[in-house]
Image (cartoon, rainbow, N blue to C red; front, top):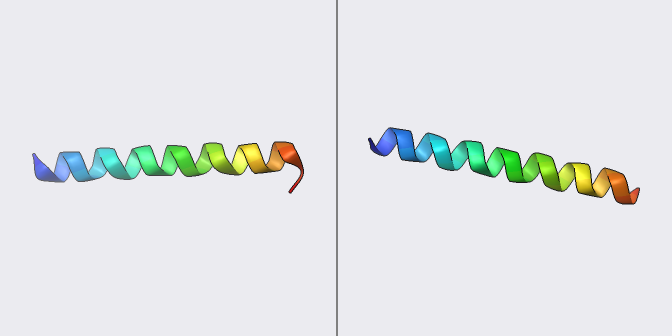
Length: 29
């Protein structure tokens, strides 16, 4: 179960990072 939680956190972080990159691209940075 701990592995599951760690993977979920990893996926959430990756999603946040991807969204942050998209946001930066949209701003033209």
